[in-house]
Image (tube, rainbow, N blue to C red; front, side, top):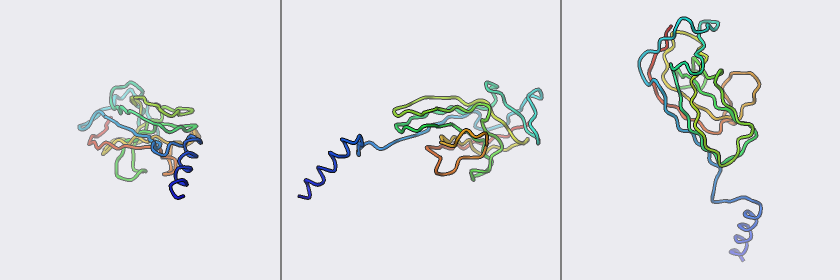
Length: 166
């Protein structure tokens, strides 16, 4: 009887479309440039109050090439990339607000590669210790705060060591 109950449970899961052997998977892989040294921002790049600069998409100064793979469906997803200055999620000096890919919806069995090259840098100089990519479900509400833990689908951080100057 015990085996019959387990068999019935397995049939119910398959009939309902729940494949118990294939979990929802979302993963990110990332490569970055530069990994060390100094990034000198041209004086002609737009100034951001209170002391930062806008790195336009395609500027060639900083890039994060992210490969996303997901078997999970969600109504909305966005890729946030942070120029980290410490180990905590709120310790960053810039993010990709001007180069922010979104998927509405993010379908299952989805793979793509996206290269983020545009960043808002909030202060100069900035010593970048890592680049953090976060695929998240935070709504498009205009706020640039990092996503909450329950909004994160996948994340990866690549350690780097470079300084941004103007």
